[in-house]
Structure formats: C-alpha cells, structure tokens
Image (cartoon, rainbow, N blue to C red; front, side, top):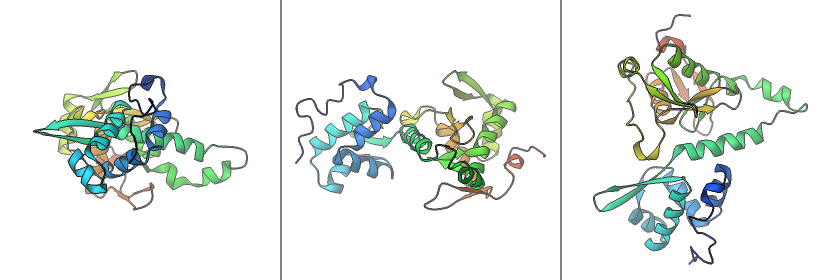
Length: 240
C-alpha cells in the first residue's frame, strides 16, 4: 500500500498557496488514490467509510489523501453528526476544463476556419454544470441589466437582489444556499469562445437546471453542446 506522506512528497501544507490552480489539480490527479477519490466524489458526496469500502483502501490513507485534496481546494468537507462528508468543489474542475479548452482550441492560421465553423458549440454548451457560450454570456448580461443580480466584488462575484430572488423563484429556480459546501454562490467565469464572463457558481447551476426542466434547453450525454429549444430571452420575459 502506498506511503501517503513520505519524505514530504505529499505534504498538504507545502507551498500550497504558491501553486496555480492547474498545478494543484495536476498534482492531485497524479496520485492514483486521489484520482479515484475525485472520480467517486464527482458522482456525489461520500464519507471516509464509504470511500474506504468502495475501493478497499484503508481509512487512514483515505483520510490523508482527502486532507491533501481539501488543502489544495479540490474538495470540501463538512461534519454531519459523527461523520464527515466530502464533495468536489466544482470551481476547481471548471478551472481545469477552461484551461484545457484553451489549449485544445488555440486559434492559429491553420485552424481558424475549423474553429469558427463550430457554431453550435459557440452558441451554447456546458461549463461543468452551468451554461457557457453566447447563451451563457447573454444570461449573465440579462441578469445584470434587469438588476436581478449585482456585482459584489472585482473577482467578479455577484449577489442576488431582493427583486432577483423573487423573480428567479417565480421562474422555478431553486435559490442555492450561499457558500454551501465550499462553493461560490455566483461568479463570472471567463468564457472560452466569447472572451467575456458567463455566470458560474451555484446560482448558474440552478438556473441551468430550471431551463432543462422547463424544456428551454436540452443537454446530450457525452457532449458539452447544448441544444437551445426555445428562446432564452422569453424565459426572462424579454420580447425580441
């Protein structure tokens, strides 16, 4: 069995703050036990006992690797009675997705035509569990212009206004608990194709769920492309 903290190799406090997010992610993915933990937690929350029994690794080793993942900002842990549960922090995976996208779709003289022909990908797609592309950018702009959200800081993060909470609730959005399980409530996620912000975080996730449930959009398994079934402006009550 692997020695998890040997000769300082897996010291969770060693230069954690000095590493960029891609560096931290690739470091965490480089260990087979941590990689398996991330894969299992991507399906939902689990505690140490569940993880240990799922792939037959000792509880001390699981706990040690979870401590590293938490210190590196990949998972969030919280206490429920006597058990401690862990969950992936989506923003960490979103960052890796965007970083890899920028490599995969770097525009050069040789591939501009191919990139620009993929209009559907540019129009609407998933960025982890929220909307990206032109549609995602439009949603954020509408929320700001209608004053349903306001800018909280220059990161940028956003917060709901009173009218925004009322209107989004009426539209069937399950308003998420702020900062629940380490997740950012609402923030600007830089869009790959538009080079502007779309709405990320827990609020962005819940808005996408509402649009799916109300048949405004459709997502397909094994692809990030989103099919826009009905004009998203009409969901907001905007007449084009």
